[in-house]
Image (cartoon, rainbow, N blue to C red):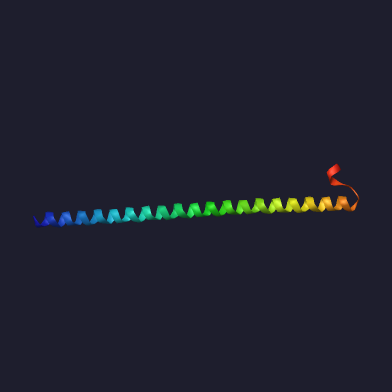
Length: 79
C-alpha cells in the first residue's frame, strides 16, 4: 500500500509538472502572438507614414511646378 501511495504521488507530481509546462508553453505562445500583433501594427503605421510622406512630396512638387509655370507667365488652370 505504501509503495502504491508513493507511486501515485510521483504520478501526480509528474502530471502537475506536465500541466505547469503546458501553461508555460501557452503563455509563451500568447506572448509571441502579442509580439507579432505589435510588429504588424508597427509595420502598418510605418506604411501609413510612408504614404503620407509620399503624398506630401507629390503636393510640394506639384506646387513647385505650378509656381514655375506662373513664373513663366503660364496659367496652370488653362493647361
